[in-house]
Length: 143
Image 1 (cartoon, rainbow, N blue to C red):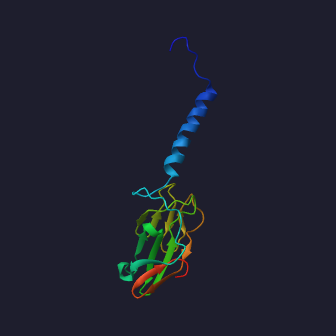
Image 2 (tube, rainbow, N blue to C red; image 1 turned 90 degrees about the vertical axis):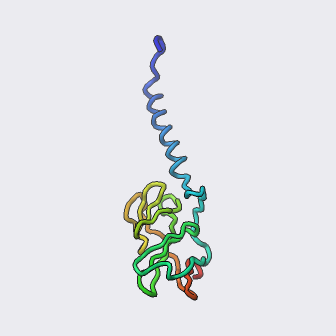
Image 3 (cartoon, rainbow, N blue to C red; image 1 turned 135 degrees about the vertical axis):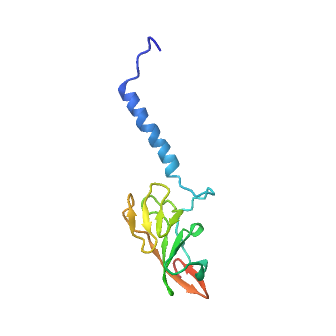
């Protein structure tokens, strides 16, 4: 507008810095899956995950509702990990092959050993006890 002085440089820079940061924090850190759920905890007791034959040798399966991933290493060896990201505690909801990807900031983990494949996370996923009882996978503390 003619006659109106331009905003101070500091005002423009502050606004530019705050608006994207605020929007990023709201959308990325308020993680939830497709149903709007935002459970940010791993199992605190044993959970029945279903038939052991649902996972073939060499495969991994993500159990979103329980925040667990299970990989079948051999006929009788399974590995289970919490799928709560070690970076900002967002529930991981994407598994491709053996690669888990966190929706919040893009951290990636190996589902067979919990190791970080891609930052910003630096700590591996927490391993959970897992066993097969009567043909069913049971994972979590006390399993």
